[in-house]
Image (cartoon, rainbow, N blue to C red; front, side, top):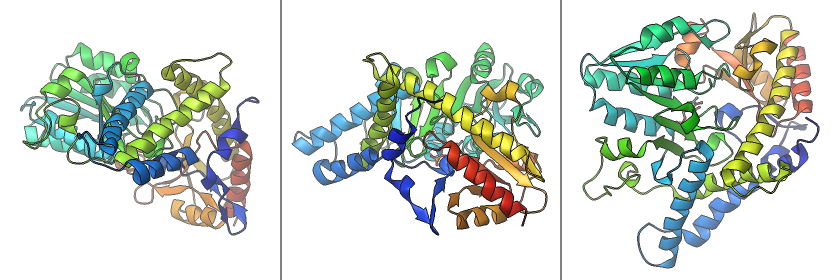
Length: 417
Ligand SMILES: Cc1ncc(COP(=O)(O)O)c(C=O)c1O
């Protein structure tokens, strides 16, 4: 994609200039956490130095904090495609918010109800639901995957979802294999049986435009630090459900949505960073677009369509390169026909060198990539990769083709001993 403004994008991320042992660092650790643009750091600093306050009073910093919370909720609503910004809840991270939602939902479930989880998800989208089912006396059903492609097995989707199902928890994209799941299809099927759907969009969020209305889900969570922002979780749910669910809250805290879900004092500076991260993506959309876009959602649409195209080229080269290295096995989609069903996150193993050893050797060369199961424990076990897991390279919108080529060269020489 020749007109993708990679130089302008990279110039906004000072962290990318880091040197390690005389080499320019390569950040392929995005699925664990992305780098942030300077604007995110500036926003956090500005909030802390000039606006730091608690909410709800009439003095300037408190009013500005209230305004910041609302503005960040509005930006998140544009990011995920919901109409009402009051459906956005902030919390510590996706895991904590999911546990909070699961415990509220569990109080509405009974023995005989069934909760569906997958073998492909991060444990934050498995264990909270397994525990919630246990608390309610409900049963857990599993959606399996086909190995090594890491695509859901449709037979197990059909077998798992039925009229007893109360909730299906799925990931939009796997943080291990990169597989993009058929969220819309699962939402239709679940709704046909009267069940709700929770989507973990943590891994998907930096790669594609989330659209809760088009997908048709009932709840969705993501994390700002994966899309260039700060350490903050974001939960979305339908207004009526957020109003009626029996969430654990203090007597003194608000009865209003979304604040009845937001326990204690929030990370206001993290909200400033989340807002700036969404504005970064909006900036990209406006830069690329040939038209004068007024709505933020439209700018985000343009940004993500360019990001998708760009990342796909990098990912394709990564996979082609890995396929040519002796002893490497890729866990996930590798065929051109299915390429739209994957995010640019590639996990692989080698027949004789462990993922941890490869990760350590890469680190020496200034290449940051994770080894392990990335908390997608069920998937790693299903693939027979425990203990040890795989080596994961995650590409983001600021990575380059030169980095992919250098990675492939360094990896080849590491594996050749
Ligand atoms: C797919 C996926 N889901 C959930 C999580 C957990 O997110 P958080 O760290 O915000 O709790 C992660 C974190 O790596 C993830 O990759």
